[in-house]
Length: 148
Image 1 (spheres, rainbow, N blue to C red):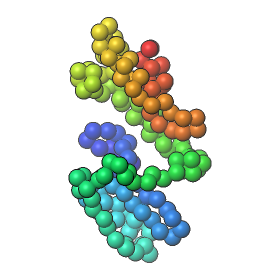
Image 2 (cartoon, rainbow, N blue to C red):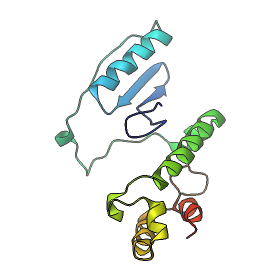
Image 3 (cartoon, rainbow, N blue to C red):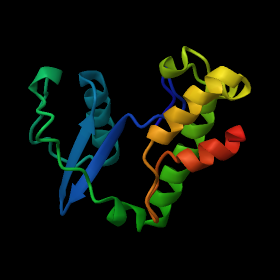
Image 4 (tube, helix red, strand yellow):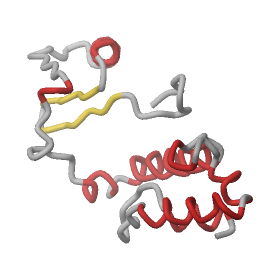
């Protein structure tokens, strides 16, 4: 995680462990190179086995990639704390970000405007609620922060 041009403390790479194998994922070739360098620095005996680069048009929306089991990850207190902190920061930043669905207003601006407020309420109603025990962007916390 690191600050990027569009977001602070953004998730830029992830690593899944399966026994003695690490599978790294990024959303750019540049970040993949950075991840390889980071692994080489901290795990000097690691051996790079392969790299797979996928173009956006290669993704089949009917066959999404398998995501890691969130319950397993969240069972680790350090990982849970890091993800919760990231989500709290992301929600705070979102409140002050220009949102296209709100006509470029921030959620705070929309909450203060009687007409845009209705658009904001509809937008937040479209967000999925976070399941018990899971971590994610919470429309309930956002509503509370906006006084809705």
